[in-house]
Length: 336
Image (cartoon, rainbow, N blue to C red; front, side):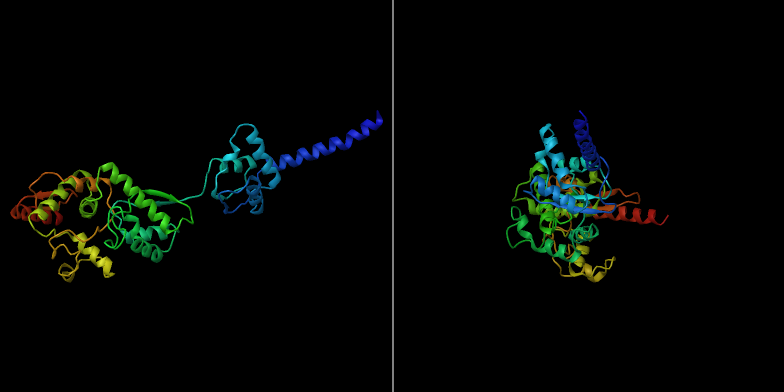
């Protein structure tokens, strides 16, 4: 009996020691106090993931994490569905929390917001500000990866992806790369174009018109009427005379100063709608759904002119005399 007691003491001690270490491994928070990124590539085994987490200081013990994954798998918690991707850890956490995050695919992403009316230069700036790429490299990709819009614009006829980078809120990994980012935006454009019922044949002209509408008016309710003005002027052989296209020509030349000069109104750029009576050769920004819908189905009006009033609304006119009166009223109200 004494021998049994002496044998039990080490066994109990070992069990208590094991329990203590298991407590440390499973329950006590552990991990980095500062931002740490862990990349889990596709195809990584359970044990490889555990070792990666231990190497980067996210879990205390790789075998313990591996055992936790196996335990959850045996208890129906879908442990086999550990998700690949990049994870961000910035505070000590229990091992179960780390496991839960990887199981549900709580990968780290960077949010990129692209408002309606952003052009390729604006988007390149936003990408650079989000830390996803340099402005120069991303702008180069926007101007060269035109194969992405081949379903709508035949090869060799597009100078950039302008107009087809759909405005939305996107989430990308830090290492997404320009091609993946641009592909996501073009893919979303395709989704929205399909919902609107746009055919590939009509898409280029609709997108160009929609980009002008996007830049000329802020109220969605007025977009179909603005689109009707442009459509009516085109039908009558009148130049569109829209300032945003003149500004875009200067942006392409790298000469935009923030003010339109007389020389720009007289430039020979194909984007100068004061001197060329048709649509510009390409979009001048990336329009949203409201502008695309308006360009696809303009309102039925006899309007040929429009001008904003002092309250930000738009006044429309069918004759030059009416338009001049609207302009005079705008100037008068803006002086008071």
